[in-house]
Image: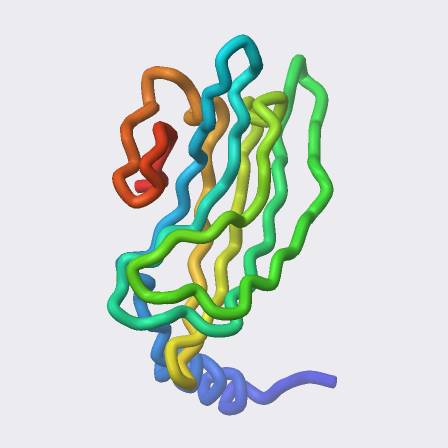
Length: 147
């Protein structure tokens, strides 16, 4: 079945009319807990710096890339976080330093009222490293804050 040119043009016009709101004051961080005599424990957190909650929050995570010329992929994980209170943080998942050489992608979707928001966050290969570590005030931990 072929579409008419008119139908295609109408669809393009409709797509242009869709309001895609910008995600503001919401970010992700990969932070570490240090334990004396043990390896650091790394976790991924969502930070909501808005004065309103994020409702029905979904996060999908995956890793992908190459090592020594071989394609590598992690499992896709999905998390339902329900409500993220205003001016708060929440744990998404632990992360193994063995995947820091990959693109670590997090696709976030949430509602504010009846409006849906979504954003893709990618920690590019080797960006989770000592030179990028800073103190993350919201978590009171050291880590890498997504820009």
